[in-house]
Amino acid sequence: MAINFYGATSLTGGGAEALDAIDGAILADGDGAVVITGSIAYSYHLNATSGESESSPQIISPDDNAGDKRWILVGIYGANYVPRGDPASADFAVGNLTTNGVVQDLNLSGIISTGLKLVKLRVVVQDDAVGSIIEFRKKGNSNWVNDAACRTRVAGAPHDFDIEVECDASGIIEYLATNTTFDVIDIIVRGWFVI
Image (cartoon, one colour):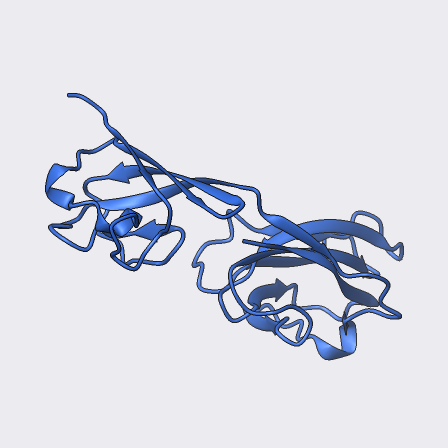
């Protein structure tokens, strides 16, 4: 089976140069595509049995004859990093967070603009116990395998972490903290990647 490669200048919209305008009837599993929009390049492979809902830019469905065929994002090149600058204090502290072992939302939209982003956080944790943990993930994910975890390793000592977490389109991430009373949890938004 031959694998074909396609080019486009936009992701969606159905225009002649859009990725979603490529007719699903001519696409085969494993086909590839490169989309260049301004200074950003996206690479995709076609999964003929995906059937997932469209969620640009991660998943693009052909407008015509899609069936279960979906373009799956492989990589993004040229994303811009926006440094936060010099905040005077932590954006979130232990008193603003719920540490009860239940998944909570953390709304960053007052700090970052909405849209697809990867946010860079500095997290400081301290507890009088070893193994206390706060984990972060993209809102809507159901598993904790692809998360960013910050765990105390020494009782009574601060632990400093630099992590990156993907935001949803509204600028919200999720966190889960051990059901314990932490001495310190400070979360500082250091910057974000705009795509």
